[in-house]
Image (cartoon, rainbow over all chains, first blue to last red; front, top):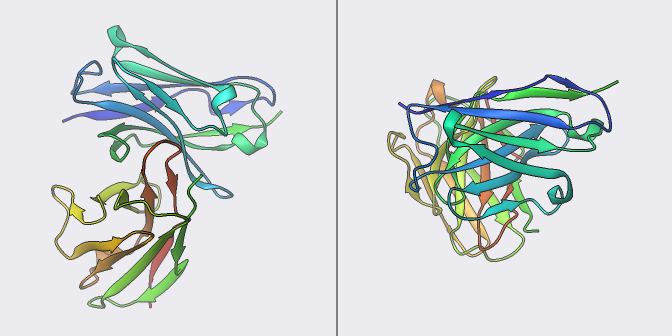
Length: 118
Length: 108
């Protein structure tokens, strides 16, 4: 059974880069049947879609974050990653990675809390 | 961006009640709508997609309907495990995909 697990620092300083990794187990990250995404959740903004990565195809970013976000993949480790630069307190949130069919999210990681604070 | 507005923000109900949650999009989204359930401390769970298609393993007491800009999630007979927060999400055309603000179903 496929599972997703987020990992990364729980505390990031303002203006620095947030880096998270999603590790996939029980399935192939490079299968063209699967696609992958990042979503975050904060009390102030609710659920916010960040990016979708379609293996062998395109990557889509939320325009509100696009200038600061990079999604990458490491197939050898069955991982995909999120980097969000120039963070502020507004980026404090619970970050989820998820499997997506096209644009709905049918399998989620447990989430990882990232706090932006000095 | 397409804005999604859910109502109510919260509701109180009893086991066995019929519960209706609505989601309104700021433009026609042509049934490109999903519903999620989230319990405290857990990730959201996909319940329905394309407005009315039940995901595998989801109870048939959940149903979805609607068209254009207005959509409804119905729980036919609320069960104890259904107390949770529910979110709609649109995925019409090009990104960004957006979510509603959530509806919390609480016990009366």
